[in-house]
Length: 149
Image (cartoon, rainbow, N blue to C red):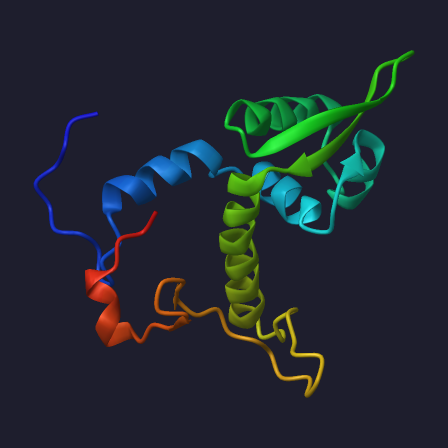
């Protein structure tokens, strides 16, 4: 891929990296499969039920694509016929954070409360940048020097 001589998007996000991510995972079904697997491993039947409206051939294709990207893993639980349980890999769990944030944004844009709430007080939680080296939240004015891994 040729490098473009453009500045990054506001906030220090590399627009080439964003374009690549959208090309890899940009369809709604893949995002919904990842979101469903946030709740833990699922069988094909359970995924089909939770990701309502998806045709079986589309679900199979999305699962294969997500496996190819090493975001989802399949573990057999029956031999005849072969049946699998699907779960997120570590990179898949990192993607799930972005999917969860996107769903939260969509809910709020639609006038609905976000889904993630603090159990102690019921307030919607906010996603924040975190520096594991410094073990603290990173403010926006500090973020321009961050390197996203």
